[in-house]
Length: 194
Length: 95
Image (cartoon, rainbow over all chains, first blue to last red; front, side, top):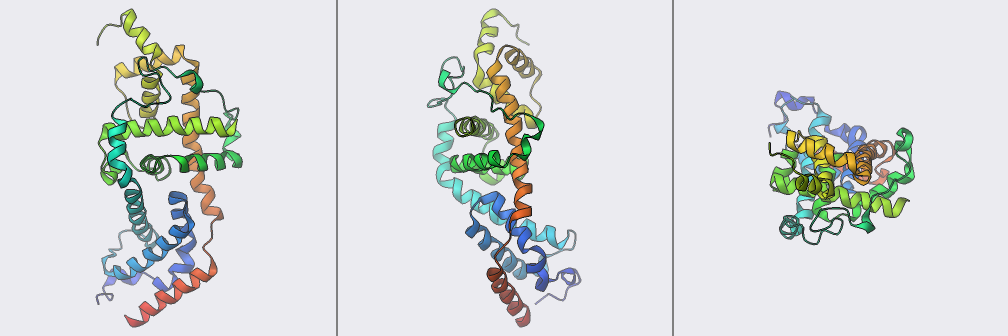
């Protein structure tokens, strides 16, 4: 065992649960919206960290290091969730066929999908808890690959390049997904909010 | 840049799919000068895509907000924490 190497001295595994369990749990819940899975990932993160304790190089804080381990585990979940859909979805998204929102020829909004105001575009709208709930359930209804892309981009704040690499997408497919996901989400909000 | 004739302008004005695509792309990346002109031209004449643009930005802000709210509210159950603590202690003791 190499746990006596200087850098890992900075780690205090016996305090991890007290110091970071809630934080990591929250971090995972936001991103995968499955509490049981989130709980398991926190556990796996601590155990993986213990196994890899000699890999800690002291360049980041203990918290940052643990979060990075968890993040990789979350990316694995995204990948698994989307891989089944990935191939089929990639074929679908490169054609405009079956696009329910826009006219195939002109690209104009179809009449039934005309966007209308939500009535909450004011600045204090962000505090609206009910709207947050509706948004959450709308995100969950997206196809898995789109959900992963949307979450990584808007919740994880990952760069476009990183998302393409992690989920094995081309840049052009990535933008098509970002667009479709948002058009779908917006429509879902319009249906369920107004 | 290709000169804008009437046909091209009509196409741009009608193409909400393209306009909303550019709205999304523009939020995180620079779009070309030509795309920028197309988008501005389209938005000028299209109420619906202007609504889309506003709401798209709103959705992004709300998505960020979701992160913050969860950190304040979520707690891992005590029982699970205790189990986890035991596993860690056991592992540390055997090392």
